Picture 1: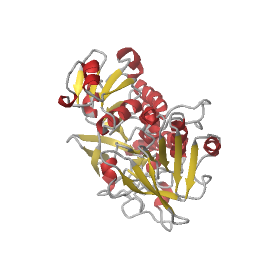
Picture 2: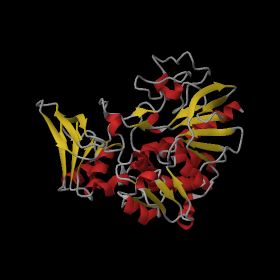
Picture 3: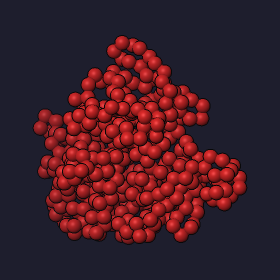
Length: 425
């Protein structure tokens, strides 16, 4: 696989051509941004733009977007997988069986991969999208130890990826496990591409997805005005505009501050009546002192309107019952999260009502282990109700939703993986 630590010398800059408000172009911009690939975005609004940029006369005859690589190769209307393949990032597993398989390349999964590989475990890290997980979308993480000036989530993830690869981790991008079976002291995972992954132990670090607004027509505006996550790649598209950020947590706060550098005005819509319960104090101070950020409390989006793109949102106030329609072309949603644990539904892994994986002593009820637990010992800390299957980071029940905590849990999980493997021989 291509070592992305040398991307600057190999690729320098990709060029992405497309039309404004193209959901396909947004997905590519987001992927490239999260993958720390420098690129130029060239908008094509008319035939003249098309001719000047691509040498092609009629815009409507072209399958957009177009991705152009350094060697001049162009791919028309590519999938994310095709782009990743062209960059050399899509590979096949090297081994039939691993000591440890890790699912999810967010902070917890990356941390686990670094420690596992550095300690000699044959380790594979599987990620269904871009390295970094939800943290990878953060514009600037300022409270992570060792970076006094802050660091973007994508850059932090890329540094961790480089460490993991240096120690010999095998990274499989754009792969997803859809079904798991535990037998013979192994985990057998059916992958979405029809292959099977086998390992002696595994760590689930699949994190969470942003919750949806659950409005009737939101799919219609998805990635054409309505975006889930911080949408860092959209900052330039927000110049001079009034944009809205839904959420009162750190990810929403970071997004608001980041967009305020480009947008005319940023309005945060917060369901509660203050920020103190959900937002770090340094972000509260920053938001308070940024003149073009306003915060509306007891507010939620209850309607979306527009033709082919988002043009207006409806905001309802839960305290006084008032409703207002406001024109905007950009709405970024950073609320809560739903864990990525659907794969566990047909296994003996116990989840809580929200779907988070229950681990360690939390599995005990009135001092008794669940009936599905097959060993005489109690589950290790971070171990699920299936021996040898561990959970780390946001996907775990009662975890602390912070990057540093996820990194710590990933490293800690590897310690218990060692103990488990020693006990099974």
